[in-house]
Picture 1 (tube, helix red, strand yellow):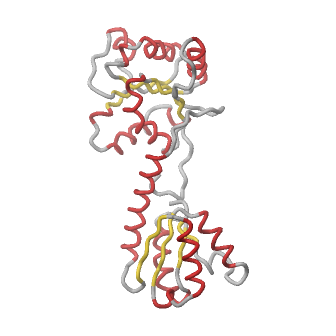
Picture 2 (cartoon, one colour; picture 1 turned 90 degrees about the vertical axis):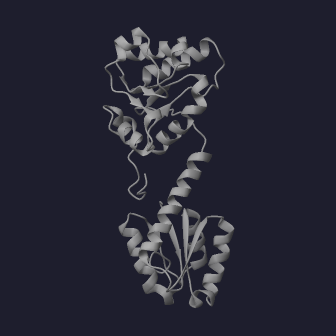
Length: 269
């Protein structure tokens, strides 16, 4: 979580700050009214701004909070924000319970973000990975592309927006020439596609680092076996734990230049 907003009464401060300390020790950033901004000057606007910047709201409930006009008003703003909110009753939780609930919320938020975000090919002057795949495998690799992007990798792929024909060939060739790395997604369909094989051998001529990812068990054509058989490769379909797969991607030689530094505030990145 990049920012967690804390909603609680000052009369419950000791219990709340204990939980906040545990969260911040785990790498989460928390915004605590009264600690992080002045409650006497434009407090409502400060709180609205803080809520709008947050990814998660933690409400620490008690009779003190229920009787507070400020907390009541603050909750109205939180309700309007539509943000994910977790509520704990003061006196009936411990720091470990808060940490566990926040970790689970972060996982849910990450899954939702990955499932709903739009895949956009990278366009820029930094190192990026060229993804080579068939149209038949586009849906199959979508979760992989999404995960690579959320792990900070700059990737370019043919989104199919260009008109078929020479213009599309020129666009693909130009992006391959400017790439720093290539990931081809091997499948039976891949080796039946002449354009994919052209991309693969062009990347070799360009002396790009190449990390083949097998989507299924497939016998490599002799020419591909001769040129790429000894290269590092990953077999996506054989990993039961996909996090292990992405750790192997992270460790691949030369791929690091195509990755942004993950945020230190997001322990799950």
